[in-house]
Image (tube, rainbow, N blue to C red; front, side, top):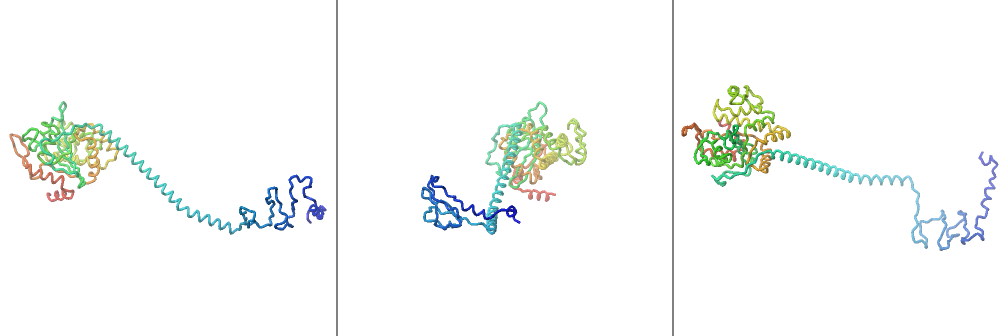
Length: 431
């Protein structure tokens, strides 16, 4: 039973409430409002419209249709429409469609941003690497001893063979004793190292010190190694250019101490030592600085490698220079497989023992060339070439007499024209 009936509620009393006069008494109608009919159900459109003192319509009948503007309206009233379940589905589908269209754009922007970020990181890494390299190279360059470059006054540059793709550096090993001026001693080692960019290889040519040639600084013929004592390091450059017609870009001089430091910095060099070579070094401690060698193939320390290169009593000067080229090849091969830190230590440790007439910028250029050429083959040769010389005695001196013109032609052809394949073919045919 309904609650109201249970409590004795009289439904007829409920309707009496509507009979009450809800209009404003005339004496209290201060603003002059018209009587408002609160019975919305009995109202008809266009009737009982209440107007305010500004002649504007007031009062809203929820039953009226406001989708069409009235004649007095200046702004179209909004028409409110109820939303259905289908409306929500359509809205969701439209939103998903907008998101799908914008998703590829967002992914493209994200990828582009990642690519830009990666490029920035790579660029920063390269810049840092360059700074480290430049600072490292600058530290090494600062320890080298530099000489002013001198021109060869004995032969014109036009008569010398040269190429922009080949750089020739003369390595001079000087055996200067205590109290001696290295620039005035006889050069113990003369090796021309050619960086051949055309054929991407390195060529090493040893000049035998007993070769009998014209020495421009003396103005007469003498052993080739006498050029250093008469004209210094530039005197050796002048003699080789004058006799063999190749353009030398500069010289690098190192004493024996530098050679030892260089080898030790690389952790030694691997060389095959014969029984005669081991006996010669071990049996003469005064001559080779109390160094001992064993027969076989093993790594030589700096002191052992130096003693090995200086062996001269058991065979000829041809074999001696071959030993020097063997050690130099081992050094270059070891440097090729060394990490940058070891190479830097090697360069830094040995730099103070180096003397050169190359400028810092020229040395930088040679380092770049060497980095490319060292990945190729390394070849070695000697002057005089095979079949162009003979032992002879001149003015009481036992020397090596040579055909100068023939050696000149062969040296120019070897340095500037021959590729690795050509050199290997020549070596095979000679066997």
